[in-house]
View 1 (cartoon, rainbow, N blue to C red):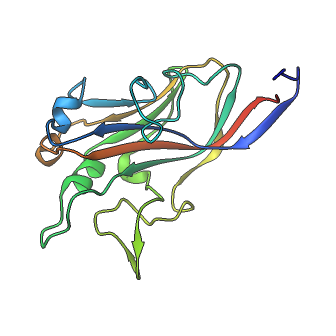
View 2 (view 1 turned 180 degrees about the vertical axis):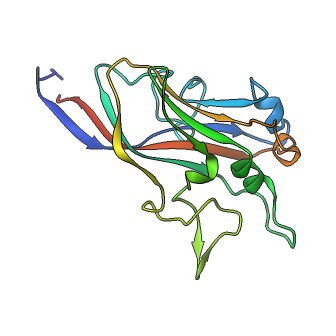
View 3 (view 1 turned 30 degrees about the horizontal axis):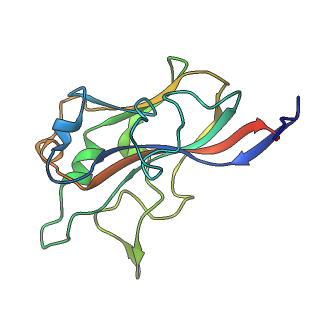
Length: 191
């Protein structure tokens, strides 16, 4: 299909990428390539559509641009609920800092608990005790002004553990996913 020159369309669409443990054969610490940081939107090879919607590492396809309006950290809740809640999610979100980097400049850096998931399971009158925030897309961190990712501009999100990985996080096995979702508007050529 031919591309229409000079005409763009704006599409409300998220960008997302996940760090994942597929099964119990590897730990969170084993899966990390750097023992203090997880990088999102950088390694997108061999991931399923559930794990990322990126086509290339760290850049948007073609001449697309993106206005990030909100950012969230979503953690899968796959552990069975017993009398003693799983400490993985609280240890993960209260022991890490998330940074959005656009063109090697920090757009925002804050503790992970500042970026609630706005996703998950809701049953009855409360969310799962293991979730990261209310399962409502409006219950997320919203930027005061959109963060613009220009065409062919590198970007990534980093989750840093300044004091090292807590034991419950380091020993965690799968299946488990940690997603970073950028909500906003994708601008692309009309076809």
